[in-house]
Picture 1 (tube, helix red, strand yellow):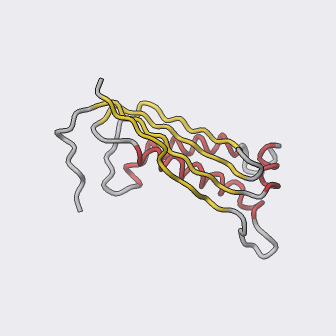
Picture 2 (cartoon, helix red, strand yellow):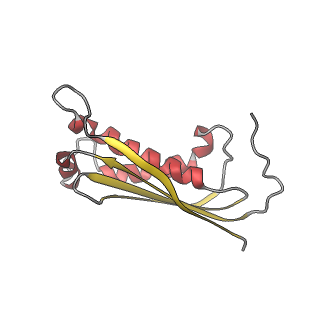
Picture 3 (cartoon, rainbow, N blue to C red):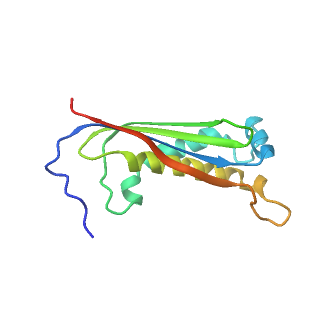
Length: 146
């Protein structure tokens, strides 16, 4: 194993956007909307978790380069009756792309939603029959010389 040598690559503007969803019970989403989740504001916590995770991507993913991120924007919203969507856009002037940072931001934000709401998701047997994290993917990436 070895880290890819990016030493000779030019520093350019890089941007990537990723997204993913988590399916919750409609009752759980109602608790979120009404601010009744015991652990606090789910969407704001997920946003902060996503931003922090993007900044620590190189500590989490082996051989991933640490990058000087210039901006991380995480959006969390309920777009259906029982689905929460997360979208993250990461920007940097760097020698390599920021797709991993965007994916880690989305994944961590979704896991934060799960962690904060799991007590409401269990069925009578203590299982999570409907809760699922899905469709984590890169939507687009940009690279351009300035």
